[in-house]
Length: 189
Image 1 (cartoon, rainbow, N blue to C red):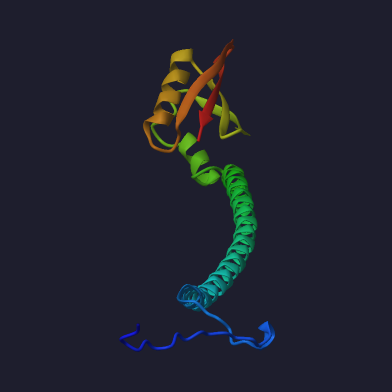
Image 2 (image 1 turned 180 degrees about the vertical axis):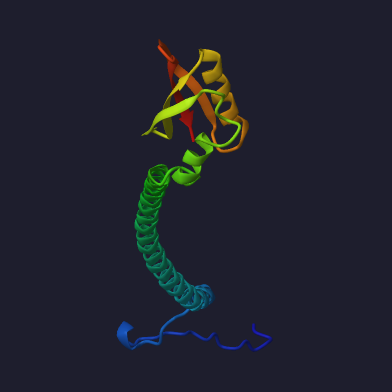
């Protein structure tokens, strides 16, 4: 016996072929599709960032190559400058040598006429002394003369160096002669 009426059971039968049936999508599949869509949307900005990073790296490499090329040019210029400096130093040394030679050829720091006058200056030659010959040597003069004895020739050399005109004077020889002796002095200017 039936006391209550029961609702008939609903049976869902889809007899359409599978190709014609609506797609059966589960909640899991929907969540997976949403997650995939989010991942794809996240990849787009990352790909733009990667593209920008590649472009910046490429620009940095180009800048580095340009800097390397410029550095190589500067190194060549620096080598040229160093070579020119060494040439300048050599030329300045040569110039100093030539100026020294010119100074010596012109008679040192004093005119030759003044030096010759100083050889015969009053008070330098002793009594009975005579200068016979004066000749030039490297940086100085050779004075040949007559003196009564070697001490007079040495005193004459000392009187020549007493002033500021001659750096040094020394007797190189004394040979006795009939009138006293023949002396030779080297006087450095």
